[in-house]
Length: 398
Image (cartoon, rainbow, N blue to C red):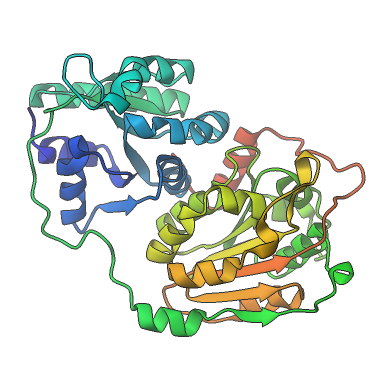
């Protein structure tokens, strides 16, 4: 058995100071130790996939990050592990507990996952080893993980067995304090409605306006998967600069549906000097709505979350979503965003960027019409190259 301090401090010596996760009783000593240290960061995520995407955003911003989860939640992280961390080549240290360990009696719901945790990681090409159970093993384990992540720029996993870490008491508040009354007063949704569905702007028109409203030098635009990312790539830049100068500040999420907002949260926290604009879709937002609460709790004023809502899964055949009856702005308000706007008038975008708020994220829910550009291209460079271009632009590295 080791002390939480022994592992966390050894990891800190290698530069790991940023943690995101979902609790497991095996992980409690680590979570408590990290929360107790004001120089370390811990983000309590709504699910394991969001935790991984948030940590990935922090890594893009130059922070070496650790993701902690129970193996029963590993399934929630399969999508961002395979279609975000793998294809973009983002190194993350993953600590996954082994509930359902055949060596111990455990609850029946953990039985199957306990048998396949190692195989599941291997199937996703995530190398793993057991979490160190003796202090003398810690440095060697971390060195192996560090060497792999440095060479391959992909996740490395440590599987933690029961009884590995001694208890550690929590002495600080586990969640940052927010003035809820002030948040709700400022965030009451403001309406920008034309009211005529036929007059709604297209996605490409909305994207063009968002680009016009941003300064590529200090702003990152993250576009959700599907037509949004592809149209952002294809967008016509009207300013008197080369389009490539703007594209270097763009990230197209070609997979990991629903994770754009959690990735943006991680990047915005790691790099408070940047403005991070997340362009979401209704289908993606519905898929991982729990991240609204995480953004409202941890997000700052440098994060702008825009939801372009055409009430359908446009890129898969325009199947309807349930968004026609949903007020995402009221959800964002309830979750603690500082400013929330909603409507179908494109002036909403101008108002959103112009709005001033201290230390809280901004949210805009803009209704648009379905459909996309004729002969819509796909990005002509790989996801890895897109990310490296962005990281060069913001002067960041793994």
